[in-house]
Length: 90
Image (cartoon, rainbow, N blue to C red; front, side):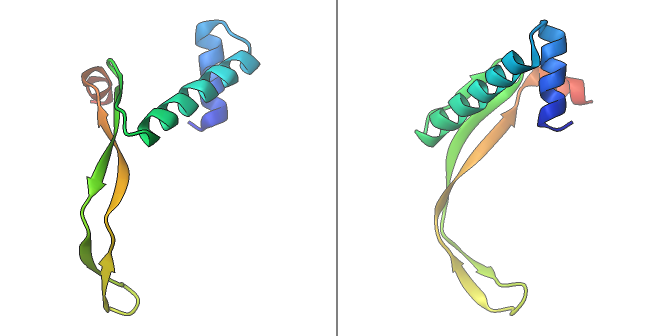
């Protein structure tokens, strides 16, 4: 399912127009992105939790040249699936 199909499904289930469903989805994505960017956790009960974690600096290998490289520390977004979503996937 892509974003357009998701918007169509949300519009159908919620009884919204596609324009309103698109606005709602965009608002959710923007809000989650903004909060995660600030380092906050966003927990959606039954769906999952978005958070930011620090990855430590480490040594790696360039697969093309096989040379050792230093990979700098960085922040990454982590998603932990909620119990209801995990159960639905089984």
